[in-house]
Image (cartoon, rainbow, N blue to C red; front, top):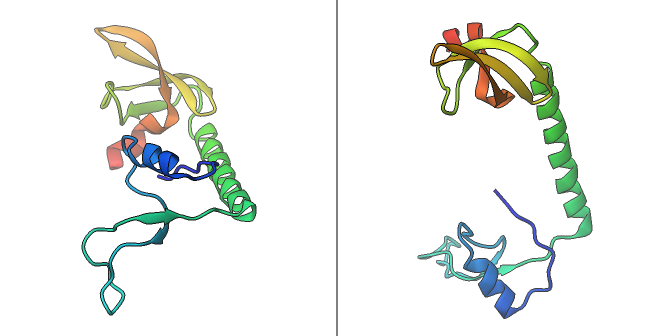
Length: 136
């Protein structure tokens, strides 16, 4: 994953961002050692962060918006009230139930929890239609 930050780079900000948990490195010009053939030598070394133009950021945003729109469309048409689904992720994994409400990415599934049919809110990505889950 990538995070884009708009800031005026200085040494303190570089150190602050570099030392954040889960930050591996900056995208930019590699200042690490190289062999004569151009292969990286040793570790990656210092990476000089390079600015991203507004045009490139606009392109990244458009790609992101398109992917989100595609995902929402996929999930919104994936389940309907009455469908039998199997939970494929999370604490209810392996349980089957019927969809009682479907609103975009969020669905409510009636699952037998301790012998009682209980409405459980789930994200559409956590479920598969029972027929599809059985085939996989």
